Each structure stands twice: as structure tokens, then as C-alpha cells.
Length: 265
Image 1 (tube, one colour):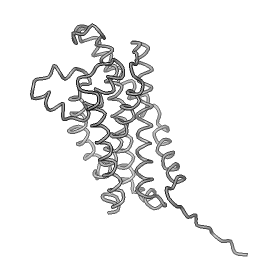
Image 2 (tube, one colour; image 1 turned 180 degrees about the vertical axis):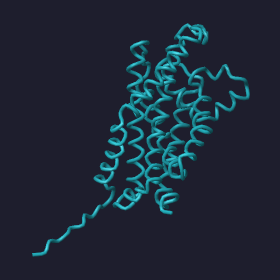
Image 3 (cartoon, helix red, strand yellow; image 1 turned 90 degrees about the vertical axis):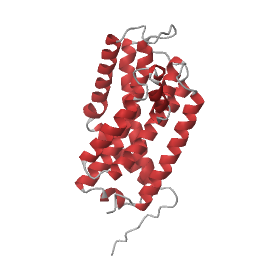
Image 4 (tube, helix red, strand yellow; image 1 turned 30 degrees about the vertical axis):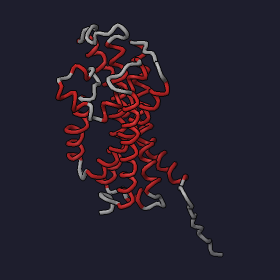
């Protein structure tokens, strides 16, 4: 008696395939937990210790919060952003270099399942790193949260955007040198020009103008606002900029997955 093979017909969103790929992405970075979660947390703590020791407490000229309280949210958000980007970009680029990207493209996964699986994998790593950094920093500085909803919005939106950018860069890059160029000449400059370690009000006029066009600035500034209740820009502008930027890059990523640019050739 012959056995019949039943082909599963996926109608609508393939939740099973989405969850399988998402789980694969999470397990991928959890397998090297010390490298992907602990190492970034330790690096961020070192940044925190160096800057708080070397910079005067009166640097900001504010009686409402200390420099330590100002710096901590910026470093936490920076860690979230960098690790969300690293997760998606490395996942796709390694798959392309090793030639096993076909294992992702062959299953019945549409551009929507592919996009959201990778995105949420990057978001998960970014938020886990942010949580670990926050826990360790809290030991040194009992940071307070002024608005938990603002903190959660900017934490999720920042990791979502950087995960999106990581996917696009991973698709574009053909070798690790390309990815290193993007990280060194685009991601890092935008991060350091975002006001992570300082208030952009202290910048010269031309650099202050440039910083206001930097979406990374609104991520850091908005996230910090959730902790200390003050920001260098209108918080509603930051919320709007981040929402619109996320929507734009989300549709761009879905479109690129649909067309297969950088993946099928």
C-alpha cells in the first residue's frame, strides 16, 4: 500500500513558518550567549565607567540630574541599536557567504514572513542586551524611569529600525569587508553624532544642524526622555520621525525580499 504525501496548504500568513524562522534566529545568537549578550553588555559598562570617571559631574550644568543619569539611557539605547543591527546583518550575510541562504528562500515563506522573522529576531537580541545593560548599570546608578511607555516605545522602535537596516545591509553586502565599511563609515558616525555621550546643544551650530537630521539622535533623545524627563528636541517630533522612518524601511525591506535583490543571483 503506497503512502500518500500530503502537502500542507498555507493560506494567508504562514504563522508556523514565521515562528520557525524566528526561533532559528533566536537560537542562533543564544548558542553564543557570551559573545552576543554578555560581551556587548560588558563593553557598554566599560564605556559608562570611563565617561563617568573622566567627565566632571557639573558638565551638563543641570540640577535635575547628574551626568551619570544622563549617560546611562544613551548607552543602553546605543547597545540596543548596535546589537539589533548586528544580529540581522550578520545572519543574512553569513548565510549568503556560506551558501545556505537557499534554506530560507526555498520553504513556503512569503516576503512578509521572512521580513518579520528576521526583524523580530534582531529586536529580541537588542532588547535582551538592553535589559542586561540596564540591570548592571542599575547596580551603580539607581536610574529612575519617568515614563515607561516612552521607554518601551523608543526601545522597540529603535531596535526595529536597526534590525531593518541590518537586513538591507546584509542583502546588499557581498562580503564581510562591505559590512565593515557600512558599520565604520555610516552606523558608528551616526551613533556618535546622536548625543549618546553629550547634549547636542553643546555642538557647534553646523554640527547641531546636522544632528537634527540624524534619525539616531531622535532614538537616543527619546529614550533618554523616558528616564530623565528632558530632551534636546520635541518628543513628539522624535516619535513621528521614528514611526515614519520605520514604516518606510519596513515596506522597502518587504519589497526587496519580494523581488529577491541580492538573494537570488
